Amino acid sequence: MTNMTSGEQIGAILQTVKALNRRKDTVYENLMEKLEEEGFRLVDFRKIGKKEGEYLENYFDSEIAPLISPTVVGKRQPFPFLKNKDIYAVVVLEGKNGKEKLGIIPCSSNVFPRLIEVASGHGTYMLSEELILHFIPKVFKGYHVKAKSLLRITRNGDIDADAIYDEDIDYREFMVELIKKRKRLAPVRLELSRELDGDIVGILCDYLEVGTEYVFRNNTPLDLSFVYQIQDILRMKQELFYKKYIPQKSQHFNMNESILEQICRKDKLLSYPYESMKPFLRMLHEAANDEDVISIKMTLYRVARQSKIVEALIEAAENGKDVLVLVELKARFDEENNIEWSRRLEEAGCQVIYGLDGHKVHSKLCLITRRAQGKTEYITQIGTGNYNEKTARIYTDLSLMTANQKIGHDAATVFQALAMGEAVEDVSELLVAPKCLQNRILDMIDEEIAHAKKQEEAYIGIKINSLTDKRIIDKLIEASKAGVKIDMVIRGICCLVPGIKGETGNIRVISIVGRYLEHSRIYIFGKGERAKMYISSADFMTRNTLRRVEVAVPILDEDLRMQIQEMFITMLADNVQARELQSDGSYVRLETGDTPLNSQEFFATKA
Image (cartoon, rainbow, N blue to C red):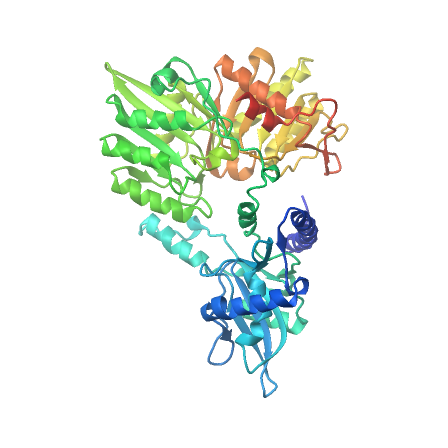
C-alpha cells in the first residue's frame, strides 16, 4: 500500500517518468553516435555546411512549402484541433503592431518523407519537421519569429465501454462511435523539442486544457518511428541485425497426414516463434472442409490485419459449418480491426458474439466438434497468445491441441456460458476466470504449503508477464515462509519482492528480455509425478484473474509435460538475457559463468 491519494500517485509517477525521459535521451544519443560509425547520420542545421543548407532550402521551397497548412491563431482562426501523437511546429509571432500570436503548422504527413537525404549517397539525413521548423520564418512572412518548437500531444486512450453502454443500441455500432470519441479525448501529455518561455507554455496548456506539470521537454525526436527506415537504409550491413530466423516445421506433426487425426492419437504442442503456426492453420482448414465437423467455435482478441485464421473461419461458414466467433471489441487499440473482422465474419454467415458485461474475453480457445458414427467428439486448442500470425513470429507462446474429451466438454461449457452472456461457475479440467481460476490457483498453492509442513518437497514454478494480484502474492509469501521453493520468470511488473529473510527468502524472480517478447504463461505446482502443470492466457494480475475471461489448460501428456519442464528449467538457467530481481527492488544481470546460455537462441537452435 502506498498510502497516497490518486493525485499524489500521479504526481509521483510524473516525476519518475521525467527521470526516465532523461535516461531515454541519453540512450538515444549514444545509439545515434554508434549509428554514425556505421554510415547513418541524422543532423540539424548546426551540423551541416552552406552547400547542404542551400540544397535543403530549395527542397523546402519546392517539395514541402506548397503542401503545408499553416494557421495563425486569432479571433478569426481559433486554436486548431491537435491530433493524437502528430507532430506540429509551434511558433511565437510578433506582428508589426507588437502584438504576439501563435502560429501552428502540422508536420506529420504521408505526402513528403520523414527522412530527407541531405547529400545523396553520404548517409546524412534530416527529419522533415526540423526542416519545417528551421524555415518557418519563410511561411509566416510579415511576422518576427520570437520563439519556436516542435510539439506533440498524447491524448487519453481510456474508453470505458461498459460504463456507458445502452442495451437498446447495437453494440458494434456503439463501439464505432466510442472509438471516434477517443480521438478527441483530453490530452494527458504535452511534449516540446525546444525550451519555450513559461508564459508561452502556459498559453499552450490553457488552449489544450492540460496542467503545466504534464509538459515534457525532449532532446530526442518526438516520434521515433523513423528508426524503421534506418533499418532499411542499413539493411546491407547484416552484422547489425539479428540472424534471420524462420519458424521451423514442428517435429511433432507430419504435414502429409491429417492434422485432426494426429491430434486424436496424441496431444500436440506448438512453441512459437520457434515452431511454425502452419499445423494450427492446417487444422482449421481441415475442419472447414471435413464432412464430419459440425461446428467451430473460437475466441478472437487480437488478430492480424490480413488474418488467415479469420479466412479459415469464413471458409468453414461458407461450407455450411456452424461457426461461432467471440470477437472482443474492447481489445485496446485493436477495436477498429476487430470491428471490421466481425462484419466480415457476419457477412460470411458466422454467428458473432461480443462477450460479457464488464469483462474482456482474453482467453485463446478454439473448439472443433465432430459427429461421426453416431458419436460426438471434441478437438480443442488452447493457447497462451493471440490468434495472430504476425505476433506468432515475434512473441514466445505455447499452443496445445488435444482430443481429450473432458477438456473438450469444459471448452463447450465455456462457449455455452459466453453465448448466454454468463461467466463459467465451475469446470472439471480447465481453470476459467473470473470465477474459477484465482481460487483454484490459491488452492494449489495451499497444497504445496501442506506438503512443506509435512517436511515433503514442495515446489511452485511460474512464468508470466506480470504479478500484481495481491491475494496470490500474499499466498506465495505464505508458501515461502512455509518452506516452499518458488521460481518465477516474470518479464514485466512484479509487485512481490523476493529474497527477504523470513518472508520471501525461498522465492527467486528473474526477467528475460531478448529478441522475442516473452509471452507464454506456465504454472507448475509440485514436483515429479504429482506435479500439476498448466499453460494459460492469464497473468497473475487482478484484471486477468477477476475481470477477464481467461483459460488455463492442464498438460496431461507425459512427453509434453517433460518438454515444458525442460523449457522452464532452461529459462531459469539463462545467464545472457536474464536479470534477477533483488530484495531492494533492483534487477541485476546474471553472471555469464563458464557456459553462456541464451534460452531463446537455445530454443531456436533446438527447433
